[in-house]
Each structure stands twice: as C-alpha cells, then as structure tokens.
Length: 137
Image 1 (cartoon, rainbow, N blue to C red):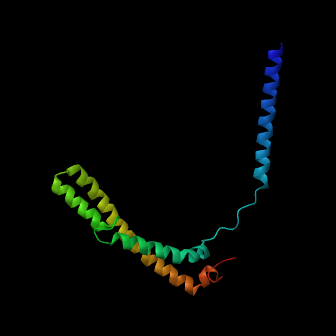
Image 2 (cartoon, helix red, strand yellow; image 1 turned 90 degrees about the horizontal axis):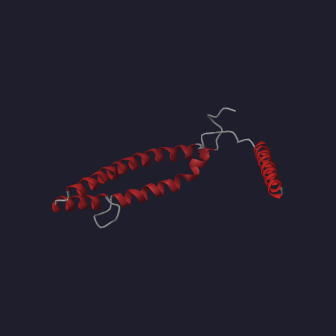
C-alpha cells in the first residue's frame, strides 16, 4: 500500500512540476520586449569598416606572401609541385583542389576590398550611417 501511495505522490509531483514549468515559460515569453525596428545596419557596418579593412589586408598579405609563409598560395603551389615530383598523385590532386580554393579566396578578398572601399566612401559622406537622408520614417 505504501508503494502505491509513493508512486501516486511522485506522479502528482511530476505533473505539477510540468504544469508550472510550462506556464512560467509562457509567462516569460510574454514579458520579453519586442525587437526594435529593423534597418540595414549601416551605422554598425560603418563602425566595423576599419577592422574589416585590416582583416582583409592581413589575409591578402598572407596569401600573397612567399613560399616560406604558412597559408600562402606560393607555399601551397610548392607543395603541389613536390607531390607531383614524388609521384603522389592523390596527394597532388588534394593539394591542387586546396590551391584552387585558396586562389579563388584571394579573388573574393580583392572584390571585398573594392566593395569595402565603396562602403568607406559612403560612410564618410553619410555621417557613418547616422544621416537621415534617404531614409523613410
């Protein structure tokens, strides 16, 4: 008889806990503030332009470095050549695919550098994205 009573008490306690957990979650969801107006994030981007510019420059400098620098295109090209000379075709194929990706990465970074230069010009002309011109209320 005591075992049944303990089981009922345990199940009742679990049910009450589940109900309370469900209602507090709903109450917490109702009390969260509504998100602010969505914009294009111009001001935030303008603040980040100098860091983004340095980051792109640093990545391009590494990619364009000589064969002695890890992460450079020249170093990876040298590794591809060494693998081909040694007759390791599978390794050469794998490294060649990485080389193609790294080369395309360099092209993408160059494009981003040009785009970021245009953003930098816009930010200077538009008070770092704070200006109201061109915005609708």
